[in-house]
Structures are given as C-alpha cells and as structure tokens.
Image (cartoon, rainbow, N blue to C red; front, side, top):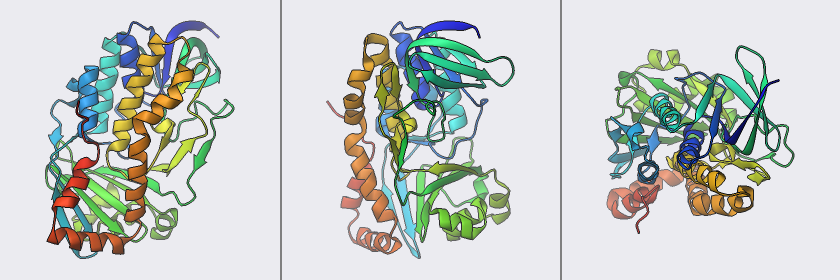
Length: 365
C-alpha cells in the first residue's frame, strides 16, 4: 500500500464532512475527503435548512451553495381530518444532490483533495485504509480524522468505544423525490402529516419536484408491504398520483434516534449524523451537521489535541436543540395529541407560530 500524509482527513462528503473540509482547508490545513458514493446521490431527507443553517453557511463563506433555493414561509400540519397552516418565514429548501455537490466543489476550491467513490475506514488513530471502487487499496496518515459518514457509515467499525446506542422505540426513515403532481404541496410550504405509526413531510424543491420523507415504526413499514405503500398510507388525501408514488425510487435509513458512545478519541472526531441523530425531521439535523462539521474542521486545523475539546464543544452546539426535538418527537407519536394541538391553533395561532419559528432560529448577538 502507498501512503500519503494530511493534516486532516474527512470521511464522508455530506454537509458535515464538506463543511469540516472547507473550514480546515481555509485555516491552512492539508485536507483529504473520502466519499464512498458517486455524485449526484439521493438522500432520504435534509432538503430543508433552518435559518441557523443558512447563517452557518454564510459565516463559513459557503452561502453560494444555496443559490436558487426556495424560501420557506409556511408549515402546514395535518392529522386525520384536521389541518392548520402556521407562518414560519425562515429557512430554505434545496435538493441534496445539488447542495452536497456544491459544498464539495467549494471544499475542493479551498484546497481539499477529494477521493470520490472511495470507501475510507479508520484502521487506528491517524491511519485510514481507503478502498476505491476501482484500483488497489491504499493508506493515508492524518493528524486528525473526522468521521462524517452518517447513520449508516462504517468508518469507525474497527475502533473501540464508538458503538451506537439506539433508542428502543426509534423510527426508521424513508424518502424519495417525486414529480410535482404526485403530492399536494405548495411552494414555500413544509407539509407535515401525522398518522398512526409515523409521520411524513413534503417540501417543493427549486426544480419543481417534491421531496417526501417519513419516519415510521418498523412494524408499519413491514405491515404496509413496502416504502411506497407506507408513504401513501401516511399521506392520505395529500397523495395525488399513486402510480408516480409507487414508481419513485424510495430509500431507507437505519433506526433514526441514536448516539455514539463517544464522539472523540485521540486523532478522531465524529460530526453530524455520524455522532448521533434525534427525531423528528425538523431541519435541525442539517443545522447540526453544518455547525459541528465547521467547528470540528476549524478545531482540527488549529489544535494539537482537538479530541480533548471536542465532546464539550459538540454538546454546546447541539445539546439544547436535541431536548426540544425529543419532546416534539414524543408529541408526533400521538395523532390524537396532534389533532388537539391543531384545534387549539385554530383558536390562537400565535404560540404555535412562535414554537415553529423557534426551530433552527438564527442566533442573535
């Protein structure tokens, strides 16, 4: 095996990994990114960015990745025969195929070396074994390795102490991009429908297609007979073209609500979904990915021992928001509770619009 040396090596080229690479490269580090799949690649969710996520990209100097994104203005929540539209003029929607590719291009322009269609695994602290789709495996050395390969990533499988701790009743995710006529969803709107066994969201993308993402009980997926049937059942009256929904390329995730036993060790930092995820799909997962990736990249470039500071810094970046998401997730497991809330919002929208607007709100000085 041949061996090269980098200051920072990032495994995973999603928003967390790309932002880590951008921050580290712009801080003067020699950076490598390893991504196992080819671009463009479909993702189950992550097409909605909160105001805070947009602000994080602006500070990073990567706001150009959002060019042409749709502004979001409304959240429509439905359950059973009840529905309410809440103003939430914050954030944007953009296809992950576009966003991820643009962020990687910005990282490359900043000086990062990108190894596409190349699976990176941490052998031990400071060493990655990289396996290209074609060609011989090779090793690289890095002062700091940043694992950013998401919920299904295997980069840390050989490293002790990074086991997943999965919530007992965690939902699994499924999603697809469908034609505009397949689902009722207006431009600028996040549409959320809650049912028995899960919930499903839809948002219109800049190209006119609709991103659909659901979090469901594994038993519901099994009983429905597949992802498309499960999504159609949850969409209810919002499903407009069943043939198009059945023909869509549905993708799934492992169980969603989980965390790593630890997020750092000597020479290793873990960021984004690779460190943990908490339902529901509110857009805050993307916020955490961008924020933690950026912070870890800058820390790895400047600190001789970034693993010592990372657990506390990572907790500060995501801790409070995780609690809120946990509470929202509990509420979404009860369609009856959601229906009562919709009824209350019909009488007075103000407190519910405040709550919707508080998710991913841009920090003020």
